[in-house]
Structure formats: C-alpha cells, structure tokens
Length: 224
Ligand SMILES: Cc1cc2nc3c(=O)[nH]c(=O)nc-3n(C[C@H](O)[C@H](O)[C@H](O)COP(=O)(O)O)c2cc1C
Image 1 (tube, helix red, strand yellow):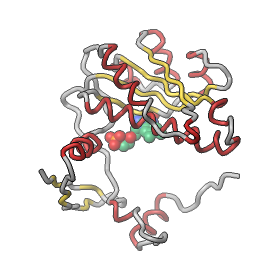
Image 2: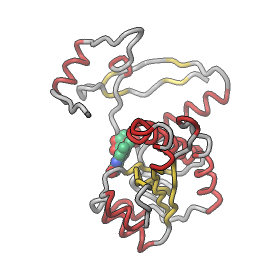
Image 3: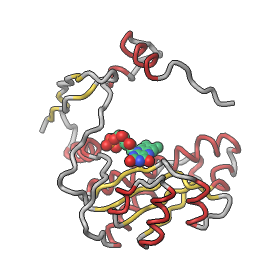
C-alpha cells in the first residue's frame, strides 16, 4: 500500500506540504517504514506496568547495533525502583513527566571499550555514535510493540553517574523512558523538509537552507 507522507513543517516554521508517494518494496519494508514514521517522543504514559519480557525484547534490539570494530561500547541500566527514578528525574532538572514512565533505561558508553583501539576518535565520536544507534534501535523496537519512549539527554552526568554507581569509565549518555503511551499523545515535533538537508554529489546550499542556518545559528563552535 502506498502511503502519503504527512504535511510537514519547513525549517523556517512554515508548513511545507510534502505530497510524496512512496511505494513499499516489500511488506517488511512498509512495516519498518511505518514504525520509523510513527515513533515520536512520548511524555505521557498510562498507569500500566511493562512486563520484563517486553523490556527484554527492547533490550535485545540493542544487540544488533553496528559499532566501530564491533566493540559494542554500551551499557544499559534498567530502573524500575521508584526512589531511584525520583532521584534520576531530579538529576534531569526535574522533568517531572518522566515519573509516569514505569521503566527507565540509562544508556551509557563504556569508555574503555570505546577508546580501546580508536583512542580519542573512539571516545569522542564512534562510542557516542554506537550508543546513539543502539538507543534508536530500542526506540523503534518499543514502537513496534505499542510502547512509547522518550530519549532524555538533559541531565547532570555527575549526578546520574553517582546515582547509578557507574565506575569512572562508564559515561551516562541518555535516559530512555519506557511505558504505554497515553492515548492522547499526538506527534507535534516539526520535521524539516528533506529537500533542505539532503545534498547530492556535493554539499550545496539552497537559499532557504542558508537563511535558516543564519537565523538559527549564525556561528558554530569548532571543537579542537
Ligand atoms: C540527544 C537528545 C536529547 C534529548 N533530550 C530530551 C530531554 O531532555 N527531554 C525531553 O523531553 N526530550 C528530549 N529529547 C527528545 C526531543 O525533544 C525529540 O526527539 C524532538 O523534539 C523530536 O520529536 P520526536 O522525538 O517526537 O520526533 C532528546 C532527544 C535527543 C536525540
């Protein structure tokens, strides 16, 4: 079945109608595309527990993630304990909506593994990419099972490390909230029109892209 992509918002905040018909190649492709399309950050959860079996299935998705040199530099801490969750929420600058989610998964980078062969590049890039890819695999796995998630990155790393009793070489990168989404949840994030960020053969700036970059970020921080 072909599907119509939704009306999208352009980078400048203007609505851009993207009437693109995409023919699925095979049924499986349509299922995957739908899962990717329907995932959204869920910040309202039903008062309903998630079974350990489902949590295990979500975690299983992390195993199939690519990583540089196949070092698999990730660690995940599953948290259900209410007191621990409250401490975590506080460390997330009191994002109190998180408390409704019955399960948190604290996604960490194992810096020993990440830096083992690739040194600084492993620590600053490959390791973070691998953890991020594992997180996305889990978000999509949860979505495919009717569960809702949110990727939470705003937190004090020092405090989360302390709460989780992480050794020095384990860096908390994100917290995933997991639960059954409240039926009232609707997607609201504006998505860029892909014409604005996809380039062919060489990087080319459209006038629209240039104006948005100038408006949103006139300078950039160059890392050493
Ligand atoms: C690295 C990262 C950090 C994020 N941190 C937070 C956060 O601290 N709190 C929150 O509510 N959402 C957070 N999000 C979710 C984003 O706000 C959300 O993905 C974005 O607005 C797009 O919406 P969507 O996920 O529904 O497509 C984070 C997402 C990423 C990838």
